[in-house]
Length: 292
Ligand SMILES: [Zn+2]
Image 1 (cartoon, rainbow, N blue to C red):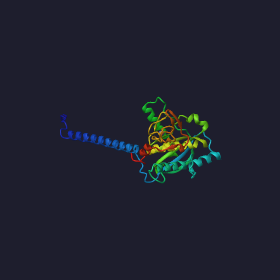
Image 2: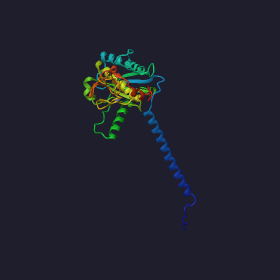
Image 3: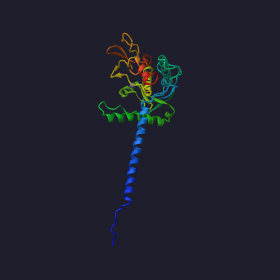
Image 4: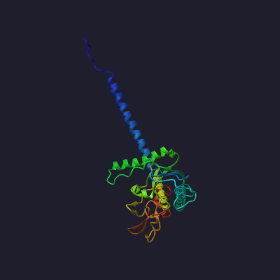
């Protein structure tokens, strides 16, 4: 005869308690992990450099797959943009000099602001993914942005450029003028969180001064500067290089994060070169050059 089963009157509550504690422990670990992740993201989104030493910036030059590269003229052009030690309005050394002059003009510090290193040019095997469609949902925009940034992160990994050794990486993506229709919709952009910026640059000597202005603009985003335009209009006062000018119009320069020179109310000229631009006081405060 089978003995009647007796309920586990002594061990069951112990197991239940253990299980409850294990569940609670797992929940706490998950909460802690997401709090740490959230804090790290917040810290990266709010990172401001101390400016006690130059910020190290890697500029990686990429070339569109269909753009022929090989003529002496193009090599010379790219070399002049990336590696020439002589500061020009349309090269990397010129951007370094401009940043130095702007900080000095604001009495915010002397000496080098950034140390640029350059890599490339590297010919790409495929073009980066396009921007999200205008009517994309929030999720659609987010995933398109991730895919876009992921393309450049993968490129850095496959080219074995050691991004970790630098505070910021800027990719300058060159394409032939004939390919402008394809790249017309691509926007230069930057992520402060990832310390990564992308500049789309038509290949040609006449375009380099504007590409240098875009490079400075995207670089300042990675330092913490916000855009200071709305649509195609500079925002007053932060998007004006001289908001206290009397009379206010015409402005003489563009605020670098607005990329337009207000000539009269409702009329602006788009920037064509970096020497059109100044760092305004709000941008200087955002990136930690001046007290807020
Ligand atoms: Zn911007």
